Length: 108
Image (cartoon, rainbow, N blue to C red):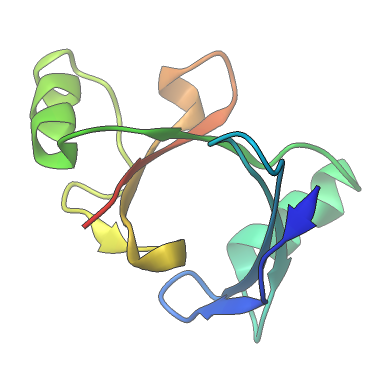
C-alpha cells in the first residue's frame, strides 16, 4: 500500500493520512485529533480503538443530502463541508445507521 502526505483538516480538527492500494480506488484514512477535538477525543476515550467512520463516494452530494433528509435520515451537516482531498463531505449520524458514522464524499 502507498500513503498520502499528512493533511490537516481544520474544519474537522484532524490530521489525515490515507493508505491505498496501487491499483484501486479505495483507501483507509488514519485520523488524529488536533487541538481540543472533543468529538474524536471522546470517541477514543470511550472506545480505546475502533473504526470511527466509513466513507462512501457519491456523484452528487446535494442530491444525496436531499434524499436522506426526505427519508428522515439524521445528518451531521445539512450542508456539505470541505474535507480531506478538498472533497465535499457530510456524515450520516450513527443513530440513523447500524451504529456506524458514515461519511459521504464528493470530488469537486
